[in-house]
Length: 121
Image (cartoon, rainbow, N blue to C red; front, top):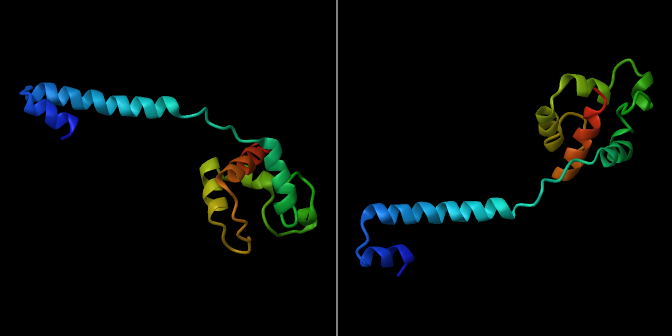
């Protein structure tokens, strides 16, 4: 027998049962909310390290690099920062397309790369 069933069998009015359910739901939500850890901030330095490791072979990541001398090529990180918002960058890095390889980056790595790109605005 559930706790609510036990309350009903004791003859509690419907309003009191609903109040009990409401308190129970909010209690569960509050415990979940309070148990969440502090959100992790993106690591700009790690984003730059990832960019140098994985992206610099094709992209200009800091106003220099292999494609800096090409008239056309993959966009520089500065161009990407000026044209894409963080949500668009996240969508692109989550599902790369075109000639870009699928690097299978973690969410944390994507956040770090976006944080680095955002510093180039």
